[in-house]
Image 1 (spheres, one colour):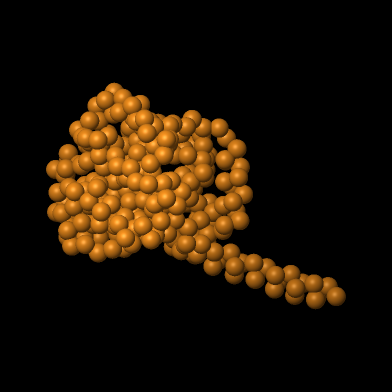
Image 2: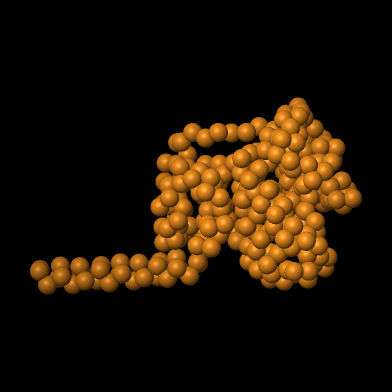
Length: 287
């Protein structure tokens, strides 16, 4: 009986070690078995290749609907993913892209006006920004203010430890448990404003584009014709106060409104609408 128990124990131990070894290898090599934030990892990898294009578009998930990241264009490289990467992620993505694409002359940040208020929120930042972007190199490119915010919201151990991030990335259950804990915290939310994160990294993008002699402008995604999508005076005031007018130009005058029934959720277009009106929508943003 004792010998049988020993054999079972050894078998269990070997099995456990085998599973752990496979998991560790997958974690350390960056395998993404859950396909978490796949659209973000896609553009990060795409940015590391020379596209040959003189123009690049970056933006949120609506921009990705209008100019899909996998669509080929010989003149424009499409690097949109979603709003959860925030302007901080856009900065890191653009920096990487410009390092690999010295031919770039113009860069456009195409985003729904309300998404400029995103400030590394508790719901999506960990999965779409921290895990895809914050390797040992990129984390040092963030300001101390941003690092402090991330540490407060998500815990430094979970922000910086590669092994822990690998475990959470590859296990939906563990990720769900972790996020349910952090999402109990309170956070400052902005409405029709520039978030602190947007202010910081728009300034850094301006410096970056000046270094590479690249023209950079922010362009608005058309929005649903509903009451909450009007009244952008506070956003304009923030643009003025933080001397960002050169990046926004006539941003406010460019905000277009389409019928509510064109949208799935007052932000994303219905597929059938894009099929019929994609060229019109594109021309309204980038005439």
